Image (cartoon, rainbow over all chains, first blue to last red; front, side, top):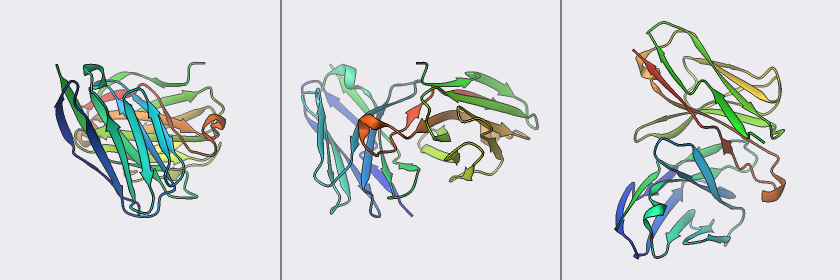
Length: 111
Length: 117
């Protein structure tokens, strides 16, 4: 059974700083997904990581996948207030049509 | 393209009442999902469907039923609502998504906030 754990669950940081959210998963997962959720809103897809060593970047966010370590990271560079949201990672077992989500990391960026 | 839509957006039920949540997608996706989101619990899969006429149980299926009579619609039913079913319900759909290769990237609806008193 695939289990996905994120840490930290809560993160408060200042604008301009860098930080990383970690996503660990328990069994082989070929694909890893990152989503963003604003308060009271739906989930928006950020990144799809399809293979070991995959790295995707958009703006101040960069996601990477290490399937050997069963670890994905979401790195935030020079944070800005607009990035305040809850971020979810989700893993997928090969051949399964469903995702398993982590608990989410609530990120607050203060001016 | 409306994407994934959900009806209704809000609902208040009394214990024991029944209701149906409707999810519709216009992306020709094969797979559809129902999740519930509770504070501190992330998203938990209730039921899902890999094609018209098929359904399968997820992580927390008890107290819910689903139907997928048409490819574009996925219905979630509560036969006898309980306060423990107070939650935000999200529908999602996926596959195929040619821009993402052979991934199962899910696209989410806006959510339904359900309160059971």
